[in-house]
Length: 153
Image (cartoon, rainbow, N blue to C red; front, side):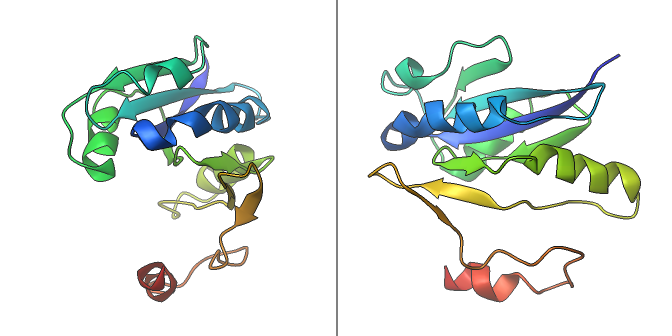
């Protein structure tokens, strides 16, 4: 039986154009044997601008809901997912190669770890990518270490 990582993306019209590149980064992920990914894209509201950018892939589910911002859209998406783990991926981000496999290795190998974070690349309007300058180093993160950089950005 396959185990699943559910990738959740909240999106609104202006970010929809980046979905194909996010999808390509998902398709490039190599997972350990017995694992699969499923992508749930949740539109923040209902409109006509997001659906044309949603990849046609049986591993992708597109949902629409009431507007309320990205937090509400993610919560709506998570309420309709089934999987061992969930990964949040912003619409304008791309997973780096091996990100899901690294997350799974930590979560499966260290039951005391409750969550992981992986470096992503932010896709910019000109097509270039940039890493987030406040990404933590590899290894365990001390409680409170991320609050300062995240508040500053």
